[in-house]
Image (cartoon, rainbow, N blue to C red; front, top):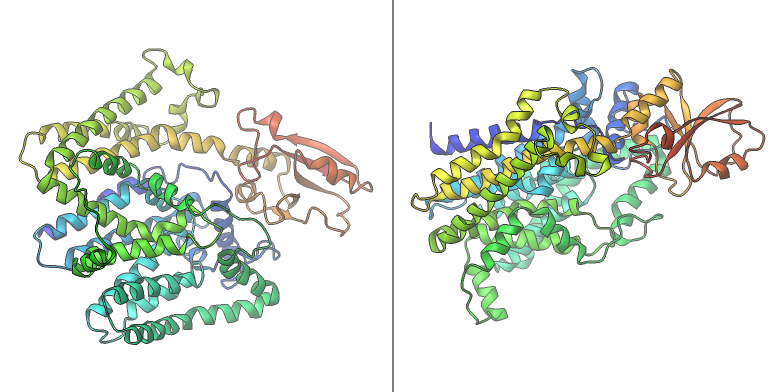
Length: 572
């Protein structure tokens, strides 16, 4: 088997192991995942693949690509589950890693280490906190990233062919990205390649008209969907689409959404690239720097003289971050399309250090070895309570976390928790060998195994404690069949999505200040700080409190959706 094929097999195997681990045992713990999953539930329940509105009322916020894929994955299972809802993101992540390996390993024949460097790039993507997290949740972000980055690669290759032929893959990828989140799926890839080409001194109009034609071609398939959706949803769908796609970017939305200053993006990049942010900081203090600073002309000259892979990666990362600094609405996941290129730049830096400053990589590996040993000892103490330290844990963590994690595959989970020790042994075995990419592989193995062990031992159990799963089961026990109402005041777009999902889509949301008369009798979920106001607004009904999350769930009284205690009332 060729070395290149070995890398491909390793990427698929390691990614599948780390991403599918615990994928079906982590409950929905925030409103984002069940909100997306419920759209797929509506598709399977109603057969409406164009505009599946929840209970025929709430239109979906995003285009339907994720919901389509989730519904397709759920058909075999017969229903939408946490696993089937997250599979599209996992597959998108693995596809992104394979695309990055193929792109960065084939763009140049000058360097013998292109394939190892491309492999390291893919592994950095897998081990980085932000990309790993986005790959295991039922959200549109990883799917959008895979389509956008795939389109960038295709358009780059089109330019490398002197714009000959038609970039069919790029056009289809941009169309799919638009059907995942909106026009940004076309704008961003074209803008990145346009900036790169202009910076490389290509002719302005030659680049502009070709990319404009590709963008127009990519609009065709989404346009068909939007026409069909408009025929179903009318002006309500159009206004929602305009607000989500253009209002969010221009800051003219009817409600506040993730408002942050411009420097927020840089802070989230530093956090999202962990643990490699630590490596970069470590390396900056371990090498010598020249005091001379490059001029503007010198920087442009170095950019144009740099290898295409480096120049394109730098341009793509810079453009993505700059674009998302413009809107007031900012989230860390918006920057995901920059991560493959930042991962390659980090990989390039690692290989340069390996050749010129190998002591940096060796020293950082010793740091990771110490960290892995500490983590493993903490995990062992957490489960075995050898020294009685468990009593010092916060009250929310005091219950047996091992019982939560080991409900299924307990032996497998125990093996995963012990993986950092295997990586430690491997790192120590090669520590005295001549510097090669194996030292970089050891760094990646230590980072990834520690992250996987932390997920199994601590992160997943804590996330499960945040979920409204138990609340939903208690509500379902009190109301064994039929629909029940909900109303939230402060955020008219918010719903009890998690409880809705875990009660089989039985929650019907109504406006808090609705002037419509209430049904003669029903049950309704209200936030604990809003119930008195709602009851006072409907004196014609007799309300009876039948469940209070603050009393029933002493550890997690607050809903993971509204972040407030909730109460269930019956009225007649």
